[in-house]
Image 1 (cartoon, rainbow, N blue to C red):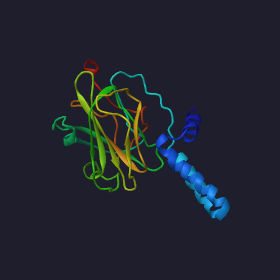
Image 2 (spheres, rainbow, N blue to C red):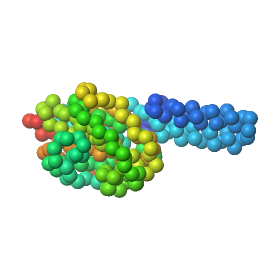
Image 3 (cartoon, rainbow, N blue to C red):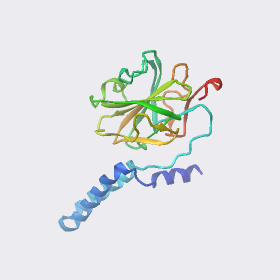
Image 4 (tube, rainbow, N blue to C red):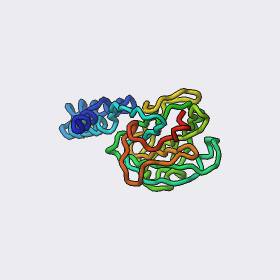
Amino acid sequence: MSLMNDISSVFSPPHPAGRPFVAGGVVVMAIGLFFGTWLIWLGGLFTLFCLYFFRDPERIPPTRPGAFLAPADGRVVAIASVPPPVELEIGDTPVWRVSIFLSVLNVHVNRVPMDATVTRIAYHHGAFVSASLDKASDQNERNAIAMRLADGRAYAVVQIAGLIARRILCGIHEGQAVIGGDRFGIIRFGSRTDLYLPAGVQPLVVVGQTMIGGETVMAECAPADTP
């Protein structure tokens, strides 16, 4: 079953953000019919890469009350207790931040960690240092999203551009109610996604662990606090 899931993931339809790139590769292939075989190969390889990079597989969120799901595929590269991004205005008390690095081989679609209401979205221009470095959370171009749980507590997800990423796409808006596991955006090419947990919530993952967006449980609320 795992093998079948891996195969279906590779051949899943591309995210809408990738369709212009796929179309561009097809156009280059068509031009190659008139100007040279090398253009056909170049366009074909680019098209295949884009189909793979922008793949958007279906995910099945676990039915686990209080679970915070991974907002992205990739590898946990850092876990630290730090204040949330100041631009989100959700306080300066340190909370746990779990950082996920996405290589160009990972699915780049971002997913909502838990049912909530979006309270603030703040885009910040910045640098493009390697997303695997800890300083990327503070220095890189990023899009920060604050979300409020039904019990009033806040958490945040930050989409961070990487070394070659140049476009962060976010498909949700302030005031919108979102569901855990649903898609909310994508980052084009290598990147990073940070999850800031609510105060008092401990991460259940470790550095080096592989995440599956919308499925891996990264943390959970205490039973009495479950929204």
